[in-house]
Length: 375
Image (cartoon, rainbow, N blue to C red; front, top):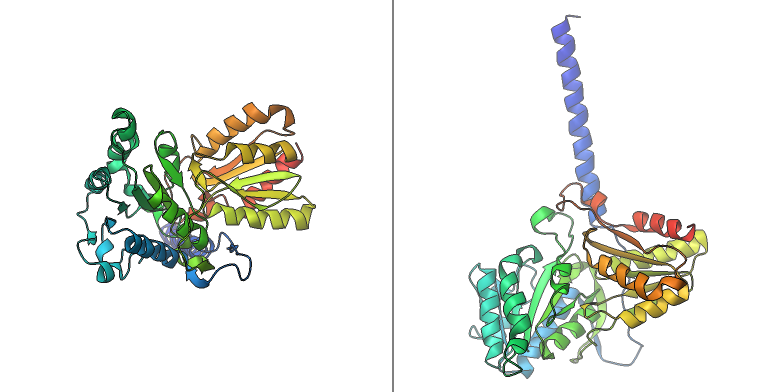
């Protein structure tokens, strides 16, 4: 066989193999990223309230509907909010409350935040949507240097209470570097803000109503992969969750697992696997509130179990898990049986087809759990 023909055949085979591998990665990524967690619904005690089955975006819509109905000063606005929003969270609300109360804004996050601060400063209620967490950064100065400090710098004469930012965040299966980020740690460094993240519809409605009623500016990061994946029987009446409190979802004695948002469901599955495969009894905690965070409940759990694993989608370096790890080792050092373990996203931009390798899935978390058990 002539050398040139041989080279061409080799190149064709390599190219074919590369295309096949890339297609396999794309195929696996599509299936894996949509199923990297198993959803564990929250349940109320039977008969305690009137409930309706809702997914998370419907629960958020229901919360905003009730807020607009109960507070005539409330305004809802953001990019594409008027026609329902890209995730349909505000659907039908403009028709019900009018275009003067539910409306679109220009594509300008800094302007959205500045306008929201002005609305809240006059005593009205502002509910502002930042369409994706990845695009909250142009409004960072407004939120951190204006909203968070308004009460302090005026000596209590003025404030930006009744100001809530709704911010879709996190992995969704195809968002890549500009539609997948989890920037909660940036805002956790800012006194004057409240930062919360729901794990499902019941929590989302209660947290949103609590934020809207709170006297401090609040940010609710909403894991967008849960908008439709999460379905629960949600109370139809208005209710508010406690801000600054975490939830113990599963009690255990061997290891404390802490996460928030989508990651809570990953850890609940890890706890099931640890019990089944290793006879390890895990305590699973949904942190819920990033700022302020429930230090007492976390430390009580760690003092009991002696081991803790913290998992979040944001990158490893300076993720909020870093603050938790530092606090835990300071307050619980003599009770720890192993170093605090973090399982997180990697210190890279959020990838597209490689998203399954980026996420702290059940396999990575279970492997880390085995490390601290065997330490």
